[in-house]
Length: 303
Image (cartoon, rainbow, N blue to C red; front, side, top):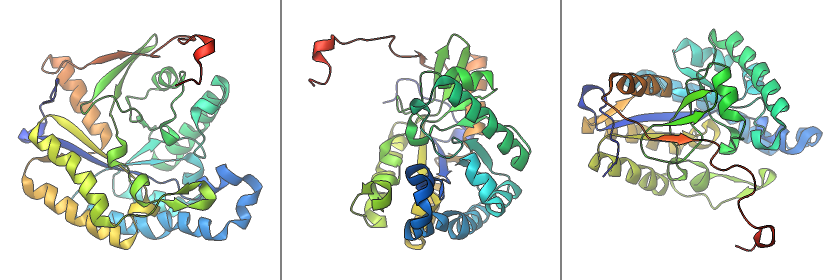
């Protein structure tokens, strides 16, 4: 059972968001710098996302009447404007996902803030609105990220894995909703084989991957009140056989009558309203989780 189940609209048992991280060829550039121009095959694989998968994905969403969330690095927004125009035209949410998929916890606080502000301007220019949600590239949020997000008017983050229900991140600057994720609903482990990016997982069949994704969904149906977040990538799950299986998944989820599909911004707004009315009491995590060194120096690395 869930300790803090949420009451979802229309009696739904599960809130579902298929979030698409459209990293595209930012990945080959952040990994290889000037050497990226020699990585033709990997670049073509990554550009499959905006060039081929995004039109396919958007057509599916139109057919099923879904509005969802895309997390897109600002560099990708500038370099793949046609894909962005199509996403925005269909009314989908665009969230912040770094400038060129840099890890925030590898930057100085000032660097992180500077690139965040630059990226927000780009998102607003191309989408017409400031982003309200964040997903840290590689889930690598820094200790500074939550307060920077609050200062910039963000409502939620979707980088952490602390629950099956939305919860609150509390800082000295204020509060931020967390829309939790899980590696169990991320398409990277079952599908990604990309030697140039340092990943060499043996690709699984769509049926095997979906078995894992749907196990999480069915568990939430049996314990109503949670949130299921797919963390998928157009160049990965948008491949033809995989996306055909996703369409069957959407049909199966809708046929249960137990699901509410919504973009994360809308889900965050719902739990905020429930919290304000007193009908939902979220867990509150005070962050950062620790301050300074917690382990004796002689024990570092001895685990």
